[in-house]
Image (tube, rainbow, N blue to C red; front, side, top):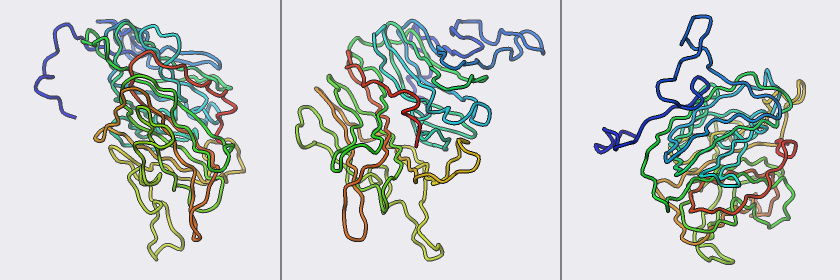
Amino acid sequence: MLPALSELAPPPGVRSRSINAENPTGAFGRAASASSDLGPGRKGSAWSALPAGGTLDLVDIDGPGVIRHIWITVTDSTEAGPFVLRDLVLRAWWDHEDTPSVEVPLGDFFCNGFATRALVTSEPITVAPTGGMNSTIPMPFREHARLSLTSEHGADLSHVFFQVDLTTGDDVPADTPTFHAQWRRSNGTTALGEDHVILDGVRGRGRYLGTYVALASLSRFWWGEGEVKFFVDGDDELPSLCSTGLEDYAGGAWAFQDELRAHPEPVPLTFSAPYFGYPFCSSRDTTGASEFIHAVAPMHAVYRWHLPDPIWFEEDLRVTVQQIGTWDHGLFERSDDVSTVAYWYQSEPHAPFPELPAAAARVPR
């Protein structure tokens, strides 16, 4: 998005900052100072290592300010073993809060579920070749911001490349909602007719930003008839907002299928657009978890960003998705393996998140 005329010069007191392994504090006049074999200031510290069980602070800085861009890429499975993208956990704390406002496996935050890379071309999240993960979601803070990456992976990671671009000195009013993101999973254990909970327990005012859904189909036939429901400001049994089906919520239609006669069977058509997409579909494991066994339950991933169609709330918010399928004889209840990320802004304080499952319980089986 091109800047408005009012953004061509900085507001008084606002400074641009950039944090990476070359300049971990984002200090002025200190970037690109590390030495390499090429000499001083010649790409001497382009990455950080992340040992198994360790935590790497990506950002630890005083405010006020706004994180404006995150770029990160990590060692892939060929070196470190499978499931790296779900074994690493991205967390963020704003203004010295006790519990994180962001707690999501790294890959899922960037719409790369199943611990598998997929290209994504959307406005808030872009994943470019080969594994360059980008977020342009604005993340304001008043007093302090901390962004960390924790490894629950079984092997050390030799290379974590990252850069966080932000500004400090911004005017961030006290009532500004802050950014939140939360991961949840229903691992095929919900009762038939029970909806998967994407988000619950939100109290305060704010805006729901978007949803990422990674679904492994554990039943036959079409998996995406479930409606996404938003219970807003006191809604009880019935929501105020509801989609017409999961592929419809993601901007698609008719089960994402190409039924041209040239194909012996329908072919799923993946796509990625600024506000919605179906960027991943596979029945083959590519994580390297097994040298011989590659067949897995069909995996599907969709996203939706509520940027042109905001979802506001003044008091509370709950978001769910039905697990419903269809076949020639009509609709039926399902219980699939559903993982989701909810992205939203809300006034603080926020309720503590449900406990994030350990890495072994997050493995995409």
